[in-house]
Amino acid sequence: MILNCLNCKALVDAQEISNYKNDITDAEDYRTTSYGNELLSTYEEYTLLKCPSCFKPFLNRFIYDNEYGYEFGKLITLYPVSNKIINSEVSISIKKAFDEALCCFENKIFTACVIMCRKAIEGVCKEYKIEKGNLKDKLILMKKEGIIDQNIFDWADALRLSGNDAAHDLDVTFSLEDAEDIIEFTYAIIEYVFTYREKFILFIERKKSKNSLPTHDTDHTTEK
Ligand SMILES: [Zn+2]
Image (cartoon, rainbow, N blue to C red; front, side):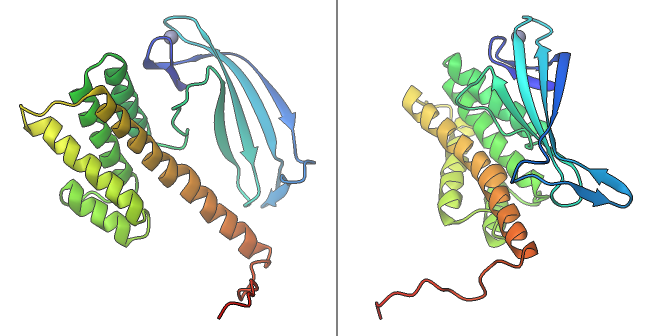
């Protein structure tokens, strides 16, 4: 399994040592669903792994949820924790680009850090099959399709411009503060698109399937 080793500051193919499964179907938020003739339960799996180069351990928790008639796993790395671990459902190319940006930052190579952040944003567009044109065209289409809102578009567009400067203008340099902000924005964009947006879509689907989504706004106020 590909994991980000904070000690090696690299993506490594971590080796599994042992695992433990625990059925959590009886918990209120999890359920058992049948798919065809197969009964799918919801469970969590803890996996202990080690880095093949520095031998430091990882502890992962997978939650296999079957709420929608199929099983999907969600990975959380419990140990080691970084304040900027990218959500597991993001493609390897985005993870890699962001990991390299962090690595450049830690090594004070700020221009390369900004270029890698721009690359990560390119990866976000690619994940949604938006691949035509330059990054500006792609971001406009992302906004048009409702994948990002105006604020995220503005952040991503500022990132794009910084990335262009970093790649093409020999006289442009980036300070630690600039690079740090750009990393924060990149991280926030990836988290917004792949975690919060996806979570919100699932929340709405769940509400719809329970028929509990209000058909009209019941939030009455006396204001006219
Ligand atoms: Zn390592």
